[in-house]
Each structure stands twice: as C-alpha cells, then as structure tokens.
Image 1 (cartoon, helix red, strand yellow):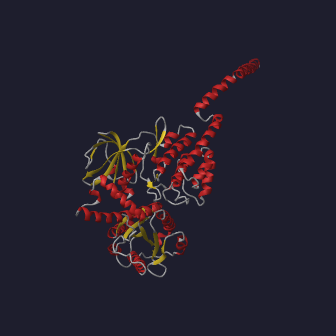
Image 2 (spheres, rainbow over the protein chains, first blue to last red):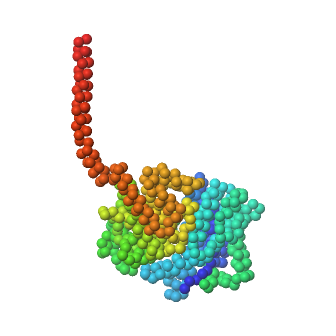
Length: 250
Length: 327
C-alpha cells in the first residue's frame, strides 16, 4: 500500500519583523488552507536583542498559522536547522495526514499517540516510508533586507546542504527560491523550480539587499508559484487533488 | 521542541529517586542518575523489576518510536549482539504532557577517548576492526548505522569490545540517513550523498579514527582533500593507517569486510614493527629484560670506569683543598 504524492512546503528564512504589505500571519493561514505548510527560521542577531524579541513572536505566529514549524537560531547553527526544520515539517505534515486517516478508522479523537506502543511502531514505519518516497516541493523565501547581509553566505551553504540531504531520498525533489525585497519588485524569483541547487552560488552573488521586509507579500507570491506549477502540470497531467498530499497511483 | 530548550524540559531533569510508571505496561522505574541527553531526549540509569536498565525518555513520538523499531530489528539480527537489547516500551504521563520512553540493557563501559588515553595506538586499529565486523553484520541485515561517532560508541570489558549505544541514526539501506553529525558526515565534507549505504558508514568509521587522533575535531577548509591529507600526515597515530583512511575517505570500499580485512593485514604487519619500537607495554618489558641480560658484562666494565672517575674527581677536589690550606 504505497501512495506516491507531493508534499508542499514553504521555508521562510528571516531575521526580523515584516514592515510592508499584507499581514504575513494571514498569508500563512491562506497558504495552509491550500495545502502548503509554512515553516519559519528566525535568524538571531546577537547585537540587537530587543528588536529581535519582537521578530521572534512573528516567526512563531507565522508558522503556527501556516501549520508548520518554527525555529530561532544563531547564524552558526543555520545549516543544521534548515535541514531539521524541513525534515520535521515533512514528518509533521505526513503525520497530520496519517492521523486524519486514523481518525476515520478508529473514530473521532484518536491520534497516533493514543495507540499502544506496538501499533505505533507500525504506523511510524508507514510515516517514515512516506517521508522517504513522496515527492517534495520546497519553496524557499529569503529575507534580503540589509540586516541579513552578513548571513547570506551561510544561508547559501545551508540550502546547498539541504539539497544534499533531500536528494539522498528516494522521492523527487524540486526547489524554488525567492528573495524579498527584490531588485525592482517586492518579491523576486531567484530560481524557478529545479531539482538541483548546484547553481545557487551565482544567484546569490546577483542579490542586492534592500531596506524593507515585505514578508506577507512574499508568502503570497510563494502561494502563487505553487499554483502556477500545479496548473502547468494540470495541462498535461490529471493527477491533481487539493489537500496536503497530491495522490497519484503507483 | 527547540534544541535550546531541551535541557530545560522535564524529560531532561528527572531527579534521583523519582519514579516513573508506564501507562501501558505499568512497570515502575526508579531513576538513579542521568547518563546523558541529546536532541531527541535523555537517557537515565534506572532500577526496575527487570534489574538495572538504561531508560531513554523523549519528547517526540516519531523519533522514539523509530529508535524502538530499530532496536527491535537488532534483536532479530541472528547470532550477533549489535546494539543494547530492548526491554520495555511505554509512555510516561505527567501533568505537562505524555512522554514516550523505552528501557534497554545498560551497557557499562568507557568512552572511546577515556579508553584510548592510557593505551597504545594500535588499540585504535583493533577497535576499528571490531567496529567494522559489526558494521558488516548490520549492512548484511540491510541497515546502515548512520550517526557513527565516538559519542555513540562504548568500550565494554575486559575483554575489550566496542559496542554501539545510540541507534537513532540507523537507516534502511538506500534511504536518506536519518541522523548524522557533520564531522563524520561525507555530505558535509563534499564527499558524497547522504544515502544509506556501506560506504557512508565506512567514511564515518574512518573519521572516528581521525577524531581519536584529533579529539578537538576541526571544521572544513576550502580544500578538504588536501586538509585531510595534511592531518593524516601530521599525526603519528594516523600515519600507519593513511592508505586505509584515504580509501574510506574517497568511498573506495564497497563492503565493511573489505576495509576490515585490509586493516587486519596492516595490523599484523605493524605488529612486527612495533616489537622493535617497544610501543606495546607487554612487549616492551620482555625486550627490556633481554637487553639487561645481554648488557650485564658491559655494565660491569662501566662500573669500574665510573668508580675510577669518582675517585679522580674527589682527589682533584682534595688537591685544591690542600692548596687552599697551604696558601
């Protein structure tokens, strides 16, 4: 009983509060409604703790509304965190789906945690298996406001490292990268859907860092990118179904 | 579930004497002390009806259940004791939440670093041989260890035997490695993917040895190949193993057995040399005894010479004294 499907995740990397455009928490909720989980990594600045405490709250709120995971770290731990958050987020999404199915089978309030340990083991194996074989679409949103300047190299390395991990899976992966603010627009596409991230070095060197932080519009643009991808796929494939997991028979 | 908060979680702060009762199997565990903690939870030494056990309590159902799955599989790998054996799996219910835990066999031993400190360097090779033997069995059973590092290994005995204690990274072959540590991860060093396969573990096994020579570890420089070459060259402990370590680093071994056999050959060869270099304390003793017997005659001669010298010296001093007296 293997189902192959697609997991959709937004990974937002930011170091502060949004200050322009739509409310990012609302946009995250909108993404969540469309089967896209929004995960947030807040990058801490040792020098500006007060400013950041405010930012932290937003990081949590966005992830909560977006049905994703949030994590606040110092730049040094970024590589590990980017992977951990992405993998945990995948597992959480799958677990959500499995829980929903369990509820259908076992009745209303049961979740995986209510199963005795023996049965739980079998369920986790299914979750593991799905995490390994499902297709994954990760859209990375990078805060390119001025204060992120000294962190960009680490962000770039972290993403490369993430792609090593994800490309070691059996399932397919596709990545897309957006930066906000962009050169001319609020949000700029740096890399359109691609399975390899080897070329991101060049993309990052082209990046110019701006002053504003339009986090809300960035999430909105992310949703649009997923929708465009879905509709372009629909034109020649008919395996689309709404919800977290797009199922297609093996 | 943030890593920085883990040390503050109730799971990591159980006091000695505290009792934990399982929700499903109703067994009671009395905590003795904490053995350690990591990203997924804490391990305690505890007493139970099954004797003294190591108790791992976690936050996350997913990772704890995965580990239990692995430990269960281990008990099915025939004829070989690989990890600690699994004793009980249950949930601990508290006011602040339900935490999954499992009890396993408590392995008593020393960390790799503590064990190696008073020992001569060929022990590193011997431990690696033992490790590779176990890895081969594990690989044959269709698993890769994943997070191979000194922290996850223990030396029990005597007779000394390397054992692994944390199986959290163990992954089905051909899947992506579940858990790893950068220093021991070939992906970090740009030397390959994170796909579970024998070569992945063998890379880490090589790095375990490098870590024994450089306990402080180090980070990646711009040319890792060159960096490692220099580090191997500069360590008297690693130098004899250069060829094998280089092959493991470059993923040239397809099976653990291949690496193991080359290492055994090397250790046999090396043994002859070490006798002459007096590295092994036991060998050193016998060599010293032999030397004393052979040189006994020489020693008698040198005794006469010494006595003569001493007398001359005393006489010269006496002469000066006498001169001083007469002036």
